[in-house]
Image (cartoon, helix red, strand yellow):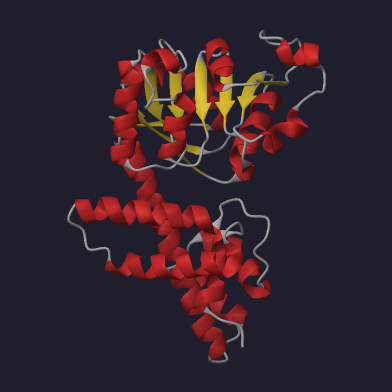
Length: 304
């Protein structure tokens, strides 16, 4: 399994750990060196080896060209569509871009359907094979290989990429053509924003009016309104400790804005989400940008 990963942020690093735990050696590249410094073995001879080592490990590549040339499947874990264009040099003349002909390009970040379709077309024009494969789940699920994976693109590319996807998720789902999985992912992230904002407001309102938190939670759990995320984030709300982010506030803001733009284009009324966008933007501006997205509670329920 010749797999390379471009982008070693929180989730990219968890992907590396998952591949290693399953006995696979992976190649990695990151645009900033700090993100992968602790992945390097320190051995120059081992770093330059371009075939899998007997033991699972990490081969750090000096360029994206090096990674792509040595990989059959390239997983993109960069932040947005502009970053994807940059690492693949899709806006450059073909002779100045990495050779992606015959390579499977697995795009696993959250971008809009139109952005994904445009990248698919650009990759195909250079002979590459594109599959969007955004995920639901956090770092524990990535390390355990239990992510929910939604794939969009050609069925044949999905079939060929399935062994790689199955390392990260137990039952990868083929959604349809390019753009369909990107849309489903944005729909899910819109729910994250809406559920977080709605629960924060209800919890804060109840507590401000003297309702015991345990009574509030027992009532919610017994109702049809309950979602597991309420309990998952409850300690963060009560302690106002929003560190150790698996999904940061700035990334939620990016996804909310992508959803609003795309949903408006589809003729949907996004007024409710636009209010949440303002709250999320204020949270970022107040310094919670790299903290857990549940920090929007700070703006919705200010401290006395």
